[in-house]
Length: 385
Image (tube, rainbow, N blue to C red; front, top):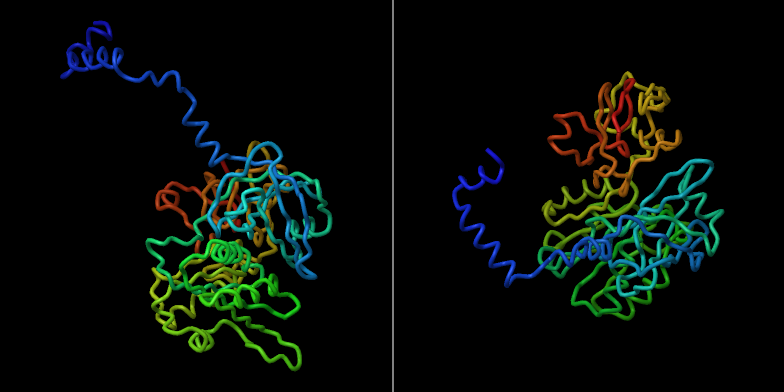
């Protein structure tokens, strides 16, 4: 029996044939629009962007802002709080790092990212020391979920920033100021010293301009004679600065240690989990101090990793993705914090350590998939890419 003869025995076959004939006569021929949907999606969510440095602004002794323009097309829109992942080639290694966009969504001609020097920072040193106006980078389109949602987050927002964690909040504050949004924003910015505070003058000016924006600076290592708020963003301090914090939505962005500390303070204050928004904070600085790290493994131990017919060495205390990139094996990546799943990889043999907060699916754990950007080898491994 031929396929056509078999189809005639299916229930409803004759009605389907009639419908097809009617549609041929009166319907729309979508064949003429082939590829249109893909074109529209790529317009708003391209996989890659080519961005040129149009301006470099010195913010502090340890931080610069880079204005990035498109080399071949317009820039896709984003929401205040999102980031892009910049790919760089430095010291013979191709790698990438995510940077929050510090400019507001209303400024459509460029993205601005602000980079602060990190101790032993492989990419931050390169960007701050070597990059010049006119240099071109490949980047992902904007991504991430650290943004305001008017349906769920209310109008009273507390923004807790630490160090370079101010960058997504600057995009939010600038959008708030430029558009005159009906929100009550309270930014509490923690920094080690007054000299290293990014955007301080602009934030002070915004606070003077808008009655519904409050800005508090907290210095953890104040110089002699400093009269402002000092210490850490503790529950005790937050109770003094914020009225009824449990009724507000709190956003937290900063270094891993600050992120962990502030989340604990939210618990002490009784802020419901649904009212706490956290930005992905990257790999922990001291993974060997993370809960669950195996006591018999040193962060300096080296393990063999079989991948793509090769065997490379990977250090236990470094994300597996970094070790792969050093050997010229580049995986798709966006967040580098265990959230986006783009680097998701099959683990065929061996064990890795995932720090807390890595968003592995239940099925990933069951079938042996890992996120190399936040996976640390604790045995010899074999991977399938």
